[in-house]
Length: 403
Image (cartoon, rainbow, N blue to C red; front, side):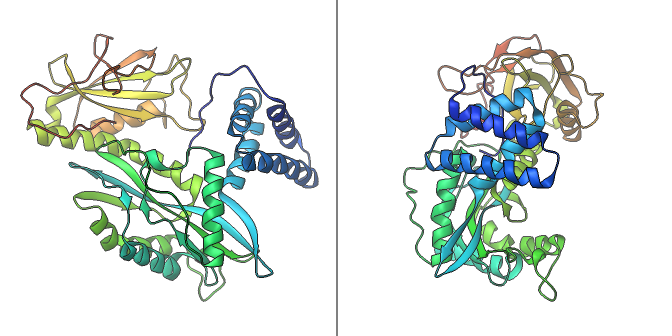
């Protein structure tokens, strides 16, 4: 959805080859005039593929450009996302620019994080605050009356474009949002997870979409808009998500905000896990130990962090720390915490800040495995064995939670 990781595929279609060629040409361009030419051609091809729902061709082209030219990959990825989350449409003889937005709610709890249908009152309060504090004076909005979990969000450029088109039409025409929400996937229960309200902001073409784009006196800096947004929406979200601690981010373009929420939730997942184990097992963080290992087929795509009672080899819980976009870890540096701003260093610092000093980091890359019976991810113990994380038999009854 919000993040791209390469897939191993040796086949490439003619449509993908043309996308790759245009992206390489755009990356090699020597002037803005030439940029406009290649970008126009690239976006024309991408738009045809989006309308044809040919996601495979787009992903194949992304795979190829990532392998051969990172700059071309950035060009292709940026334009694919732009067309998936924004468009221009005509209504009553006037052209409107529309952008799909995500409103992230970064939540953690000891219980469960809600998702699903939102009341008319909640959507009305959110929409009113958007008009007051976030969007431009002439902007129109449409919000989906649903609190999305990550499992329920559009998972491709093509799906995102379809949602954009329906919401943009509703925003500009003032019509009803026609979406089938009854068959949404089940939400996997976890202790820390983002939730999203999704919508569209539309405004007359070439005009401002947001308050920070407007002229004085309505103009407000992003930081002020964020403060007012967090203060104004706090009570509405607290009513929607009882028993949860949460952080509100500024409503922004869909892909940007989804990526930001993905990153923000990773350290919170570790902190929520420590709080959960502390409460459930009546053990202080200093009485826990962690084992950290990198997982992936050929490169590290994620870290899996497992927890045990200090002095015991039995794993009782686990958290996954995925790597996003072009985050990369060399296979010979998987456990190297000396590298500043590296994922393993952030994991190490987060665990230490949670009060756990006993950390063991494996240097090897492990193949990702899931439990054949329950589908839960498998973790690596201190001895290097891939095992199932299971609570002690005398643990109080609980709702199963996975990361």
